[in-house]
Length: 365
Image (cartoon, rainbow, N blue to C red; front, side):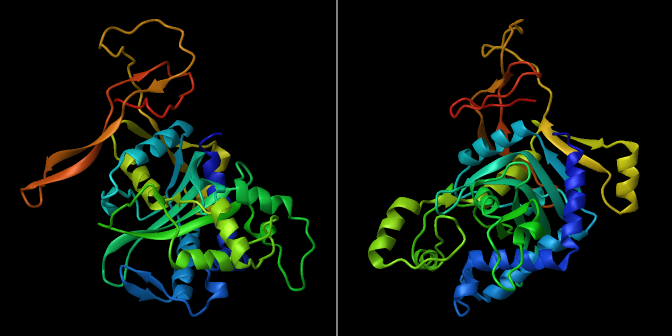
């Protein structure tokens, strides 16, 4: 995939966001996933504060649409960077705090060439290709970002997108709209608000308490189309077979911004041809995409010796980990600490694919 293709996808997203029907379907998808449609009187909470679920969902949808309609910076994350993000996320501490100062722009549109791999509460694979964010403040004046993650169903459909696409020819009910035609490639996965200073949490979330009962009310048939009611015996069996701990998306997003700030990461603008640039500029859209990839490296042996002329079939990275690094704080004159990724060396030639293994990871400048 060419990085400049992300500019065309962003352009198409703006077109979608300008359609009232897209906003309607996006809102309905968010409502359904939160259980609001089936339990209007239920209350959502955040940090102990009671929230109106309808207002929360509307805020997420409004934010995702606003980003699409804004002249937002476009980022393209190369496939090998996704491997590093997934691995480095597992290496963080659960108590690490989200740092909004790492977020490079007020709004952003990111396309992951290789999608982020997630697991939902029913064990289905979700693939996150498109991430949009917007900075802001909550009612208490705390800074943070509101983010939305989509699967690109045209390029890498995930389990849910495949089910929807397989059943797209099902006859519509009276007054029912064809959601797939309206949302196009943008299959919504999740939206969330991340506040500066809150903990990123564990790698996965376990399902418990009220979430279990909400899932029971929101269970579909095998085709994923019709809601079904399960008696107690059937529900207990369903829970044992289907319900699993699900991926902590907040942690992955935090890792993405952390990796963006590391010296191992190269960020270089890339522009399309003249016709594409002129068309995008006329529409007040970015005409260049910031490509996120590994910085060029020198390959050495683990012992630090000279390079060897070996016909390697791939690249690999060895032993990476996070460390807290102290820095002087210009504002206070004191000391602050930042997360840095420790990367002794990379092996293998630039033109070979990166092979990610669970126990061998490290990148160097």
